[in-house]
Length: 371
Image (cartoon, rainbow, N blue to C red; front, side, top):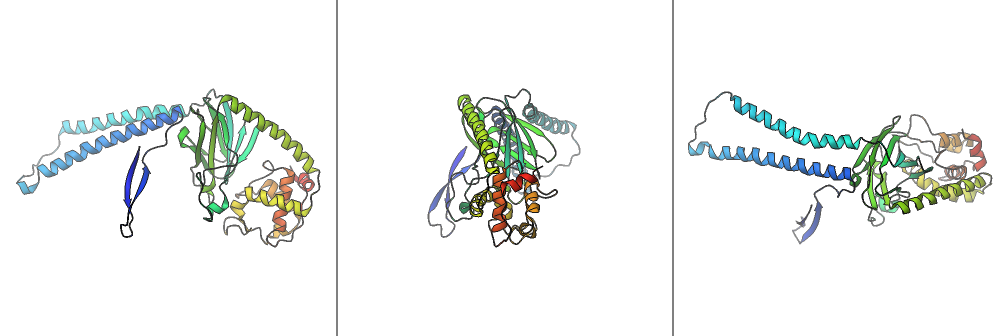
C-alpha cells in the first residue's frame, strides 16, 4: 500500500511537497515470500483488532465512569470467569498466529530435492557464487561508482544495490543456497524472494527459493559485518530456462577462455607500466574498500599500504600475504579469486604506488609461491 502525503516545508511553510511513503513489504515474487506477506498482514490485522478492543474498552470505562459525573468506584476482588476469559482468548490468538507462521518456517527449511544448488560464500565485502552443477564460479561485488559514494555525482537508480556479476537462476526452479562465510557473519537477504539466512564462518547453512517471475531482484547483506557492510549488495537475475542455459554456456566458455588466457599470461613477462595499469583496476575492484584509494587504510582496522615495510620489502612476503591472506584478520586469500597475472599486477601496483619503492612482480613469481 502506498499513501501520497503532502509534507510542508519546515522553513517558512513555503509550499507543500508531495512525498510517496512506502508502508508495506515489497511485492512477493515467490511462494514463500507471498506466505510471509500474508502472515505479516494477518498479524497486523490481529494487532489492530486487539488495539481497537482494548483501548476502546479502556476509553469507554474512563469516560463513562469518571468522577465528574458522580460515579463511585466499586470495590471487588477476583472474578474467576473474567480471569479464565482473559487467559483463554489470548492463548487462542497466539495459536492462530503461531500456526501459519510455524508452517511457513518449516517450509523455509525444506531444502530437499532442489533443481539447482549454489554455494554462496560471504567476504568482506562481496559474495562468491559457486554453481555446483554447472562448474561456474565468480565473485560478485558492488559496482556503484566511487564518485556517487563520495557525493561527487548524482546517485544512480540502484545506488548501492548494483553489482558487476549478478547471480542468475532459471524461473520456476527450486534453487538451494548453501551459505558460509570466510571471515565474519554475513546474511544473504533478498526480500522479494522471501529468503534470508546468516552466513557463519566454519558452518554450512542452507535455504532456498523458487522465483515465480522473470526479473531482477535486489537485496543486501543484512548482518552488520564491518565498515563496508553497506557496500555488499545482492542481485538475482531470473531468466527463462532457455536464457539461463545460454548464460550458463557463455559463462562456461568464458571460464575456459579465461583459463587459457591465464596460462598464457602466467608465462609472459610484463613491463612495469603495463603491470601498474592492470593492477590499478584490480586494486579498485578488490582492495580499495579496506586499504582505501590513497593506500592509507583505516587506522585500527586495516593497515596502510603506503609506506608499509612489507610492501617496500622483499617481494616474496608481499606475494605470500596476498595469496594466502592473514589468519585472524579480515585479509582474505586471493589465490582462488585472481589468476597469476592479476595478482602480479595488483602487487606491483601496491609496491610502486603512493611513493612506495618496492620492485615489480611477474606472474611467474606468484606461481612459484602458490600452495
